[in-house]
Length: 461
Image 1: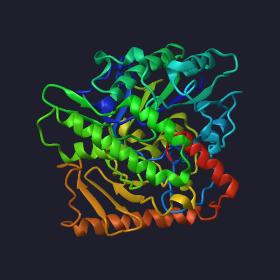
Image 2: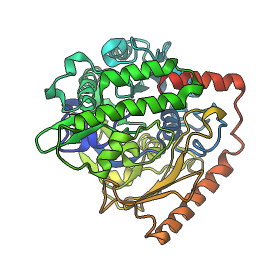
Image 3: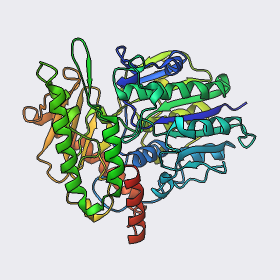
Image 4: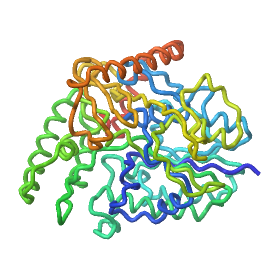
């Protein structure tokens, strides 16, 4: 009997938010999955943007030029994607995803009648109808076994609200942690409605985010300003695109004033990574690829898994080949960049695979092409390297072993390491460009406008 498969993607979930032993959120259900499954605590995503990250995961390919060109291939899921492989293996493929994903390029034809939900305040959150809809799907006669169900949750995504019942200190020191506690409750409800022993559960994230808080000796100062950010997010969606630079400046100034007011309450010097968390946004015009953004959780649980922690670096693109090996589904290894991590599950040593990363421009059109400064880079277990595309002289290199918070840029003192990193980047890019050149096509003006509308809905522009 083939196992069912649950893909549970929690948008904007950072790895340390669930793996750190000092976490303050209440996550008994995520902890249950960790205790009954394999936790990949050093997993790296390929990009800071949801759609390209999901495409990268389900195609098992690195994104190429997401931050360089304005062209966009609308076939986010290629012919040899994971979902298609499962369908060819007689799986029924279902989904609960934001409606905007379809317009942004996720063009897979799912088997359920209503695979998408509206990206608005009434359906955006688990606590406002979405959770109940997911449970109804799992209990529906429409779902035929064996099934693969992809759920994409936006409760942590920027601009979203915190359910009032979770706005208490017992659910976490910060708004972000309290949101995780709220999500965990629904994960428990979902688990009660599936046969865990016959379901492969893969919990993961598309990317992380900068979380605005500072921990002192006796308290945590939260700078998330949930209501303020939500209001700014909603107002921002109504502002014309050409006024975006002005809106960003006003937004940053308002935050700066509020930050200074709160910082008066503590008497300590901010560390570089704390300043970064307070001042940067994932959607700023100047992109970065710090671990705040690219270090994500991946958990394989249920079915025949038992408790184990994988400390070696893996990539989100490794999910596809790992799952197909578990299911004994043949795939063409030449058409993917990911590698199965089953050997790590079995305690074997394997050669480390480099994680290639790109930031996105988000706005596809020329309106923001000159404003946005994307970066490309690679990560190993020891080093993180990224640089600006427009100005390659602006480089960032971090020794992750001795500087896990990425506070000291050592690029100027290590030209030899950077040279090797650049060689690796070019090898990956050259190979990927050859493979994807024929698939890339320029968007029409109408398609460009439609994509911008959806990106604005999600607060990206």
